Length: 270
Length: 256
Image 1 (cartoon, each protein chain N blue to C red):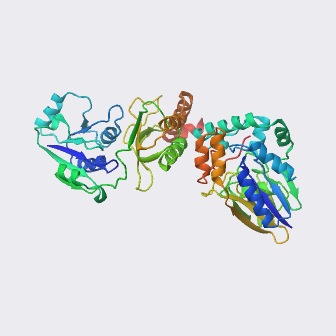
Image 2 (spheres, rainbow over the protein chains, first blue to last red):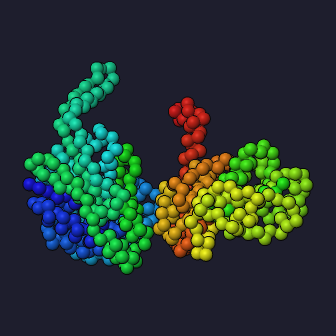
Image 3 (spheres, chains in turn blue, yellow):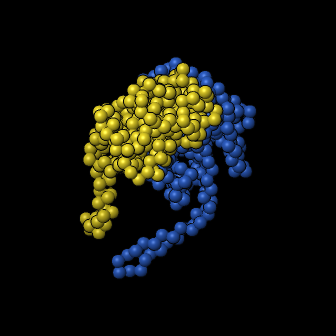
């Protein structure tokens, strides 16, 4: 079966449409969505309605949660004071325009989805807000995958796609006991994989093109897709809706609007 | 001896003067015309060469005294060639122009005694705008400052030809920032100034932007958004003080 996994649409309807057309052309059997349907972009309601109308299994992203629960971010949400101010502006705007039915739908989204040996999350199995950066410590990364009991963990949130293979290995845990010999236990771990699918609506890989992933469940082959779309239309809509013009400037350059994690050792406290 | 230095915006006038001063282990005087309340170049010069006197709103009489004492005097002119400097009239001076081959026209050749190769300038003087802001007392969130400068120099707020500034960071250091369109990257140079770790710095900092179609209000707002609050400054300064204390007395900090 060929899966298409998309994430981080952020109210960018033009990008979502282009990606859905590409998925159609690639003849994927099933689409999974890793959340962040809203936030920053100018079409939050239209994006949610399209995802719902296509009945795409979707997990809740950090922005979706913020719209339901209110802002309650850990420091990892924003890399700078400037980014935080912009993030808050975008949150307030989205919070104002979002329709009640859309908010209700976002509240129903699960944290994780499973399909056989595959697990789908937004940020990490711990939290929608936690970043699984490619430079994250191997042990921590392995722990995140093992906690799901799956072999392949699909995530988004960083907006930069990557595939990380965690080779089979042996973990030795040594417990020191006063007056006694240390208690040593060994665990064997099979090969695990983290697949970050990038971002449809707010890419940060240096080009404005949307990214998503195709996954073949029979061969375990991962294909990263990069899809051009009419960025100018989304930029124009950002300006027309009164969102900060800097969002359009950054989107057109593949720079992301505000959020970005840069500390791979940070454990999200949200 | 008076040396008058001129050249297009970003040609490297102050850098050339700094090179001259580096070869001169004696007092000197530096004057930047038109800096007004944003003396970025003068602050850069005096941070590197504390023995250099900055003449800014000081009586002409004092300057003449330095001249009589044979103290070298460097006049830096603004990028629009201003030859009408009353003080220079009837006083011998050496005229140096920093101009790239592409920018050399008859005006520079006629004015200068010596033409030195400077950075190429693509600034259209007819369309050029200058935006300046003193930032004394402001301390920047470092990643916000980075982001603001990337956007500013990348053209997010108009066509920027030149950015220079002096910015204070929460660890107490002050940096000179330099960007000239066509040259690689944004240059950050730490100034040789005491680390300011008690409240808002009571010394000059500021920014100057030269370009065209500049969105001045948006630039000002973005700069403001990157400045730390009193509470944040105090918080960071306490952290840095504790860090330094730990470095000085590592055993005490372990025992504590």
